[in-house]
Image 1 (tube, rainbow, N blue to C red):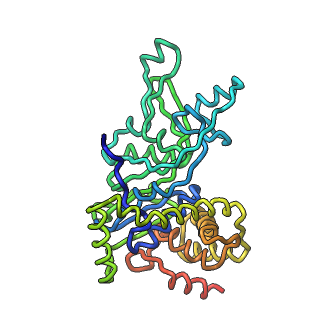
Image 2 (image 1 turned 180 degrees about the vertical axis):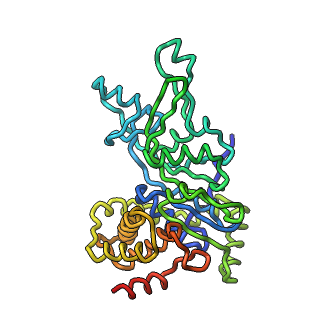
Image 3 (image 1 turned 135 degrees about the vertical axis):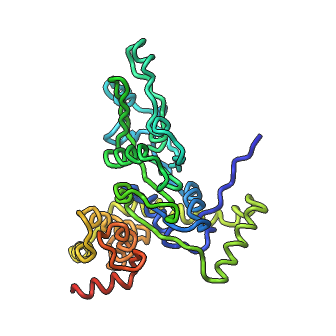
Length: 343
């Protein structure tokens, strides 16, 4: 019997605090719109995303539903809608959220699913084979090398991310199901850019690089070799930290509903967006949501100015129409200067 593969613990990752924070915030609040992690090879991008699975909270699902519908939600797949129409009560169970992989080589049919046209003609009912978007509903959809995705697949992702629904149409027959997911992408900028339409769909963006501190760099190597030598023993060393972080995420989710902000926070977000010549209002909204999530993660119910500044560093770099900063980097110092100049 093959043992379950042990994942490198999230809390064992050395450094890369901004990347880890962005991922955690999206687990706490899936409405942030996901995160794009950009950086050179070997900077723990994929490791961090896959390690996130062990920290995911449990969610309630309709038993027997292949889309994992929320029994207390407002959007249902056709099968669950039929149960509601027929007065059938839902059986409910709890399951951990998961990370669903979307391979760069995936075809459009593999992503959206397929309709059996012959079956529909013969039997007068639709037969749908689930694709990756069905599996990703209410979970994290992870795309490694997202900048290398086929254009057709990118278009599908854009539609689903915008509407929260996946619709398949074949030979005059259509089928729709919920497809609300948190999109997490990783990419190496040296291998090509990302289409602007998809880039804007990521709520947060993080740029990562290899460790320049000698001690930190040596610690990265030490931990990795230790993990490869004995994964089970290594993972056990971090069980307590993993449990503490997982509990903190659940607590933050509960606090999030009570987090508030004042008018000064709104004005700060507007000031930054105007100063950086950001298109539209999506950045402002995402900044506020991110600041609220940061406050919840730290156990607070009131958004602080520092929360908003930290949120801006994650939300604005990929949305600036003009690039007034070297390498497109937006740091805390630049944000402080903009806010002080506009007081």
